[in-house]
Amino acid sequence: MKLTFPKDFIWGAASASYQVEGAAFEDGRGESIWDRYCQTPGNIEAGDSGAAACDQYHRYKDDVALMKKMGLHAYRCSIGWPRIQPDGAGAVNQKGLDYYSRLVDELLGAGITPFITLYHWDLPQALQDRGGWCNPDTAKYFGAYAGIVFDKLGDRVKHWMTLNEPYCAAIVSNHVGRHAPGIRDFATALRVSYFLYVGHGLALKCFREGNYGGDIGIALNLMNRMPYNPQSEADKAAAVRADGILNRWFLDPLLRGTYPADMVEWYRRKGITLPPFETDELRLMSQKLDFIGLNYYNDAWAVHNPADWPEEAELRNPPHTPASVRDWALTETGFEKMLIRLKAKYGVQKILITENGTATHDLVSVEGRVEDSQRVDYLKRHLAALHRALAAGVNVFGYMQWSFTDNFEWAFGYDSRFGLVYIDYVTQKRILKQSGEWYAQVIANNGFDISDDYLASIGALKSSVGALKFSKGGA
Image (cartoon, rainbow, N blue to C red):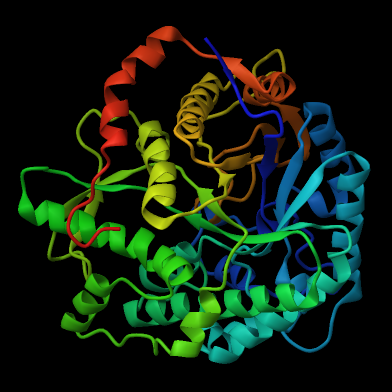
């Protein structure tokens, strides 16, 4: 069966500044929290860093040519704040601005629309030294930085995102400590989540008042959390809390102007110092968005575990669950459920898939090819789920596969490959993978063929998606 997408559907791929650019110490770029974090032994697999990455800073013309060859309509990339303002505030590094201007011009010249994220985690280290996102001044500096970028690129760039995955920038970076700056304090993580959104609101206000034209949104990583044992009341409550911190803590302030009451009460009971929740700041962060960006990878199951502080919700996969090399469960039906939830429960009218992809063990064959059939299968499954959501009336206007190339995958270093394009990190040679060739055909045909057997296998699940329900406390 041929699955065909809307005629104006946007097909693209995504990346982020620190993950692909390299040139970390060139042309006046300042130190980021990731430059500092990578210097500590044990933080990154194999002691890797993003100092060289994919060298896109020097090879962007070749990469854009490859995007054009694949037929990409759009490229989602991010601006490196330390490249624009080495100290995070004050003096502007013109060479940094000029680089992004050249990249934008190269994309437009190739017929590729730039979608730009202002913040994909590379905070200037100078601001971290002053308290990072815990310091309310950082939100103000972010608003000013956004204005600098809008002024430089706003005449040509018409699609923007303020933040990428604020959950990771707050919780994974400041509670789990697996991302820069590597802090392990839950109250700090909640405070960071709050002032990230104040910064988001200031950037959004700057965009609206500047009349730059185009649209602006935010990219959130949202994934379903289910009880490991559906018969266990404790597991069901744990799933609600797990959903609360990953999904509702970051959706509700944006779309409802408030934080989820059940989570606020839970944290108070745990004695956690909460953010200020100032009325004016809540109003600022809940300004109307043009779209919500969804980064979706996998769902997970929650088990009640009092040792897993403070949510008491340990995530695990049921036995024999198909999973990627990252042990991320393959849950494409959850993709469909989340899209429907955003429309049905939050009233989201316009969605862009800002990330979706999987890591596989890729290698170059003796014929010089990269056969990554597992990634092709992952994409087929998730694009079929996306197609079902479209048929159910969810307005998704584009899809950005993660990622265009293999890249520096944060704490996983260079061992975790997500790209449509293989990178030989010794020579920086690019090889279009089997998945990249397949995706190019999807773009050319605005759709793809899918097995009738697969469609039949998910038929029974469609009724459960249509009757989607959440436990008490869920959205």
